[in-house]
Amino acid sequence: MNSFQKRIYLSPPHMGGHEKEFVEKAFADNWIAPLGPNVDSFERELADYVKVQGALALSSGTAAIHLALRLLEVGAGDWVFCSSLTFVASANPILYQGAVPVFIDSEPESWNMSPGALKQALKEAAFDGKLPKAVIVVNLYGQSADMATIIEICDQYRIPVIEDAAESLGATYKGKASGTLGRFGIYSFNGNKIITTSGGGMLVSDDLESLEKARFWATQARDAAKHYQHSDLGYNYRLSNILAGIGRGQLKVLEKRVEARRSNFNHYFSRLSDIDGIDFMPESVHGKSTRWLTALTIDPIKCGISAPQLVELLEKQNIEARAVWKPMHLQPLYQNFSYYPHQPDQSISGELFEKGICLPSGSNLTSTDRERVIECIRGIVKGPGK
Ligand SMILES: *Cc1c(COP(=O)(O)O)cnc(C)c1O
Image 1 (cartoon, rainbow, N blue to C red):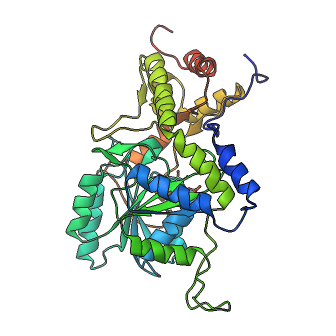
Image 2: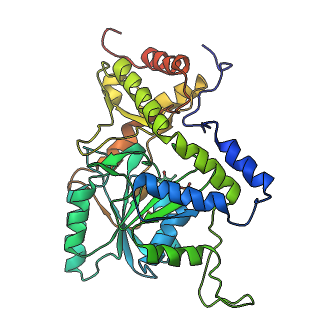
Image 3: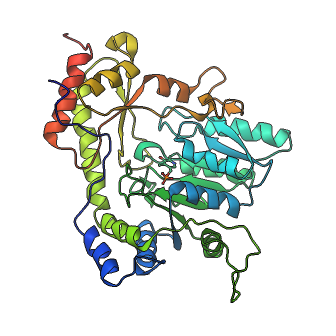
């Protein structure tokens, strides 16, 4: 094998075929802008799919988190709890609002927020008389956090939960759509997500009044006056009618995309799980993961190679693998904020970062390419009988 082989991407876009019809209709009607029928329909169709009252189409998942924080009146100096093991976009809106993040570790069962660490953090916050205004729970790599347990803990302190389901659209938790369990849920249609609009996001909730408020803020908070008048601070956060057209086409194939990604996982699992020292991200008993990304950990002693080394060697074969997210409490930007580990002497997110790797997981990954990835890994990692 050599580096001239075709590049295998981690999670590239995968169009379903219907996207162009919606986009072309927008062109035919010259409805390039402003907001229009594709946006309205995309919101309705997604809300119906995940079974919530309402949805607000936005320019990004990050914008959706930002608006959710503002709806919960998070302001300067307030505390917001957030999963540590995540992409930086989960936490940045906390700083946009001038609030103070507190990071919560993962549990080994789902790699998502540790209910035990959350409980401890809330107990201490209550003791200090400084409870958070919101808890942002992230559903990592296509799998829901243990939402019922987390919400039960938060309810004891009357703290609302924002569910960052950017990576888990299409997953379920106890029969409900991932992203619909908290007060607000957010999805992302960034280029690497399970469905994409090239860039975009959605805020969902059963609280229609709040969604209307967010809609107002997302369109520059323009007062109902004949001239341009503004009493409140707004943003330019809405999704375009063109991109919403792509989203409508993508939504039609979401279920197929889930099945394809789960199939990737199952193949990787059946061909690599015999290697001593390789452990796949578990699927929790509470629901169905989309396996947005196939993630696994590598024991450097048993495998004779570390996760970062494996990523590098795969890169030499023109295969794009990635480290698991670097936890927020280890980021230079966030290292001075508080962090609550799973156990006083055990940080799960830190371990997952050191040992974790995500494999090419696109729904359009061919079985030949998948086999190439598997063969490369088997060739590199020293397993039993090698
Ligand atoms: C992708 C992602 C986001 C941000 O979504 P954008 O649409 O890119 O702004 C937020 N949280 C998580 C966990 C993500 O993976």
